[in-house]
Every structure is written in C-alpha cells, then in structure tokens.
Length: 294
Ligand code: NAD
Image (cartoon, rainbow, N blue to C red):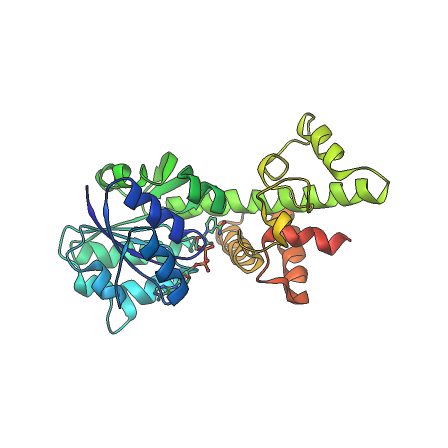
C-alpha cells in the first residue's frame, strides 16, 4: 500500500483515483472543481484543500490534467509548485496527454531535485478508467518504470515501457492520431450507409465482422442507440471531449513537423475536428463528429 497524492479528478482522474482506493492505497486527492472533489470523497479518497496538501508526505504523486501548460505550472512554475513540496525520492507519474518536449523539460527539472518523474499517458477512455483496464504508456528510466508499475497496475491492464522520458507521449500522439482517423472514417462510412437506407446497427455489425473493423466500431459506436453505455447514447456527454482530441491532434502535428514525418491523414482528421469544434461542439464527446456528416 502506498501513500498517493492525486491531482486532477475529471472524467479520467476521478475513476482512476477511485480504483487506487479499491486497490488498497491511501489516496489524498485534489481538484479545482468542488463536484469532482465530492465524487472523489464518496469513492474513499481523502480530499484536500490544495494540491500541495494532497502531496504532503506522499511517496507517489499522480497528475491527470488537461494539457502540458497545466502540468508544468502545477509541478514547477506555480508559486506553490509541487516539486517544492516533495521529498527527494518521490515519484511523480503524469498520466495527462501532453507534448513530449514539456515532459522532457519536467523530467530534467525533477532530476536536478532528485525527484523521479515519468510520463505515463493512458489509452482506453472513461470506460477503461472506470473498469481499471487502461493501457499505460510509460516514458522514463527502467528503474522509474519498475517503481511506477505496481501503482499503475491498480488502474490498468496493459502497461508498456515505451522508452526514455517523452517516449510515452510520442507513442500516445501516434495512437490518438490513428484513433482520430479511425473515428472520422467510421463516421463517414456509417453516414454514407444511413443515407443509402441501411440500419446503422446492421451496418456496424457487418463492418465489425469485415475488414473495416476497428476500435470505434467495437466499443465506441458514434451513432446514438447502436450501443449502450457510450457517449453517443447519452447525447455525447462525458467521454473524451472534442477539445481534447483537437489538442492531441495538435501534438501529433507538432511531432510530424519536428521530425519531417508525413501525416496527411492526421492533418485531414485535425481539419475535420477543427471544423466541428468551431461549430460550438468542443465540449461534446469526440464521437459527435458524426454530426458533421448529417
Ligand atoms: P477533464 O477535463 O474531465 O479533467 C481534468 C481535470 O483537471 C478537471 O476536473 C479540472 O478541474 C482539473 N484541473 C485542471 N487544472 C487543475 C489544477 N491546477 N489543479 C487541480 N485540478 C485541476 O479531462 P479528462 O477527460 O479527465 O482528461 C485528462 C487528461 O487525460 C487529458 O490530458 C486528456 O487528453 C487525457 N485523456 C483523456 C481520455 C478521455 O477519454 N477522456 C482518454 C485518454 C487520455
């Protein structure tokens, strides 16, 4: 059992912290949202009045925040930077999806302070966070990975060591670029079928058993009513926001530019999500992209 400080209790962080409590850890949790704190308290977390309070005496700190600027500010830039409150030897696991460069910069500052830091972005969505079946993609040293592993096993099923600091974020950007392309393609194909008189449930089943099968069809169908317990069937609330997918596609485009990797499909997917976002849909789940085709 570890003493864990958990910052960021949103759609993902809330259920992740709850699973750490179920795994027997002592979790001190903080979020800026009072609603998120109340849900975490009901799940057995000890909620605190500040992020610094949450990490006091913690051997492990987990952050699950929107973007790189939030993580950097909280850990090293703020007047109450968490790195100032941590003891040497503490391990900070950042599970947010952020840019690899920021992850490397934070890791370098951590090393100067004798704090361990790993980037450990996740895949699997809110369903995976709730079920404790997330995939974690870790960037850091072998020793840091080994320390993080038993903690991550309380929240996930597949835990990969992608390489040194930043490697987790690079792998995550590749994955989410592919996810955006697959979701856009799935929305496009389903909309064409619907416009040609097909039942989307029947068409989904056909494609799932055929060569068009993919993750969106299997567990995240974008058409309302085809699948239960997915954002499409609750008016695209909860889940993974268009704003966050758009952010992730920006991270992928940055990587593509830095490495001169050609990403025309990723670029097209980004343009589609940008259009959808510009029509006021940033707060909806990303599978709502299908509305663009209707
Ligand atoms: P979210 O917006 O639901 O949650 C973020 C939480 O961080 C909010 O509750 C917010 O109040 C809190 N927060 C922001 N700044 C804070 C601060 N300084 N101190 C304390 N709390 C603060 O987002 P989410 O969907 O949980 O996503 C979190 C991260 O996980 C993002 O980087 C996202 O890209 C990534 N991610 C999300 C999903 C998904 O399906 N939602 C899947 C994989 C990865």
